[in-house]
Length: 293
View 1 (cartoon, rainbow, N blue to C red):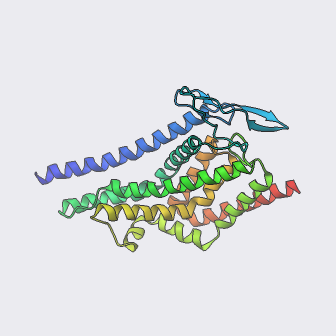
View 2: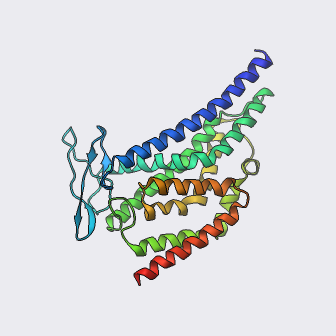
View 3: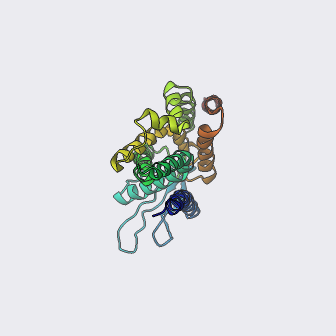
């Protein structure tokens, strides 16, 4: 194979990575939009046939899930919503898929610079006859880290639901809870842990060099991706908790958090942006708390 042909294939490989990232992100956002549009009452989850599984009713001024309808096979399926009804295994499964896809939609754009850097250096290494593990292993490790976070988020949702602290729109039903989440997220923006994790996310090349460099073995590349993903989880977990304030299925709220996460990592002075946002969150949280008192 000539050098020209090899170079053309490698450039095409980079294009494949870009297309794959765009496709994954767009597909995830389309799923979120479909899910949100299929929940007209705010408290149901779409069935596989596109119908709404569950409905909501008003009870003492609070929206509560009304029923646990049967699917076509005769089995019960519960709406993923607030109200404190028992969760079935299917409910956990639907909630997990919802959170996992949401994390992909929100985090892949901010991880793209790191993944493209890995692909570019990998292309250069292949041209020199010293190829690295495929970029997919690194990206896969990153997504696994956020999938684990999605699992934790499902249990958090279950606990809040069990305590009757979620509305059918999967937002906080308590001003005290909303205030606590806002203040906690705001204070976290000022912590050393936030600083350390954000630094690792802002400088892709520095991160890779400080963790042993690029990897030739698939397992090592996968592990490096998981490590990078865990730093991102450490950086953004408090911001993700804000989904319970604005509504887990509030598409505009999801998009706003995703845009802010991206801005923190790529905008010069992102650390200042984080602290300003943190201060604003604390102020809003205290205002919410004062309204209760």
